[in-house]
Every structure is written in C-alpha cells, then in structure tokens.
Length: 330
Image (cartoon, rainbow, N blue to C red):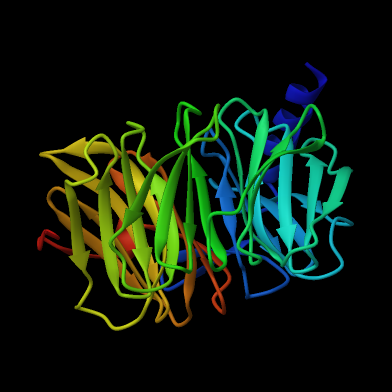
C-alpha cells in the first residue's frame, strides 16, 4: 500500500513539474545525454524508462515529467534496460559488462553482477517477474533467476554477438537473435531449442514477439523485415524496405491484427520511423539513428511511439506529428 501511495504522489506532482519540450511536434524528454541506447515502457503504458549515460531516467508518458533517476549501478554507459511487469524492479546492462538491479520505488541498487564474456547487449524480464534473459556481445545469453540470485542457464548456440532477446507474453518461449544471422526459439521451461529461424542475410538487430505467442517479427542490416509463423515456420513473409536507405535498427510488434495484417513499427539508421497497419502507415524522419521503438498505448484514436535515438534523445511521437500514407506494406 505504501508503494502504491508513493507512486500516486509522484505521478500527481509530475503534473506540475514537466521536463519535456516540443521539437517538430514531437515530445522530447529532458535527458542529460542526446544519445539514448535503450528504453522500455511500464505495463500500464504510463511510465517510460531510458538509459542516460551511466544512469537511468524514468518519465511520465503523459506530460514528460521526470519521475525518478537511478544511478550507482554502472561505471560506464548503460546500454539496455527493462522494467518488470509489476513495475517493482528495474534491470540494466552496461558497457562495463555489469547487470544491475534496482528497486523501482526507492531507486536503490539491490544487486550487481558481472559477466566475463563481453558487454551486455539486451535484457528482458519474464512475464511472471521470475527471470531475466540477458544477451551479451560474447555470443552467450544468460537466464537469471530473481529469487535465487544466480544464472540458471546459459545459451551458447551462437557464433557472434547476441543482439536481441524476448519472452512471449505467456512466458512459454524465449527468443534470441544474433549477429550470425540466426534466430533461435527456446522452451522457457525445459530450455530445449524449439526451432532455428534463418531468413536474414545480415546482422539481425531486433526481434519481437506478437501477443499471440505464435508470431515473431525481426529486422536486420539487410533492410528486411521478416514475419515468422512459429506454428508453421515454413510460412514466413518478408518485406524489403526500399523507400528509405539505412539499416533497420529496431522493431516492435503491435498487439492487434486487422485484416490478417499485423501492426508493427520500425526505426532505421538514418532516422526514419514508420508504423504499419492494415490501412496504411504513419512515418516521420529524425536526424539521427533510431535504436529503439516502442508502440505506446493509443490515446483515443491517435497512435503513439516512443523512440530512443543516438543524437535526438528520447522522443514521443503521435499520429498528429507524423505523415500518413495509404500505401500498405506487403
């Protein structure tokens, strides 16, 4: 009850102390650095958390106000971050090869651990808050138990850097993507390899589960976006992004499906952001690489996208500040 009361007070105070600015119609969150390596969204969509040099910041999505700062976990830049589904724990990974855990309510550093094989490239909580899946540049992914405070499994099936990890919404499967052009899906309980997905021609940058648990979407330096049907791996569909030059650096799966067309948003090295759905697409052009995109809960009928960039900071874009095209991606 005290934790709920504390967060309520913080959110109410944030209304009066907004720390966001507008740029080209987009909301820009006030971070110390303009180079934001990663961001995540709370389960209720009201709080966005991002890396900020050696620290982490949490902002209100509604008004852009700063809610909390987290420091002391790293001695070098923070590269990835994730918030637990119940919004009680925060985990981060850094260039210093450290994984740090924080109490999200008090901002206290709870635990730090260091791996011996590369920097931390991605972190993701399981839906039940029990585990964290950790990717590293040393080609190994680690499964860490929150309760036991130790690694319970290591995935060493890859030849190059782990670039992206995710759990399905049920916690039944884990997916790991690599710079070796492969994606592997694992049973989250037995750790058995369920399938190896090959379809990209270059470094895979990002992979994301759809809410149905049977579909994946990934993007790569080959400028392709690939839709994977896990129930039937032979049924894959790829879209080559040819309108704008630049590698695809990040992708996020939508939660809905209309007219057999999955929603998704992607960001590219040259600052292009595009949201695709059944009736067309919204797009915007920034001046720096977009390394993370997140589909935020809609506000009425307006789409909202969180974008972490290497140069433009952390932004919130909505349909009103983006251009629309009726062209449907095939």
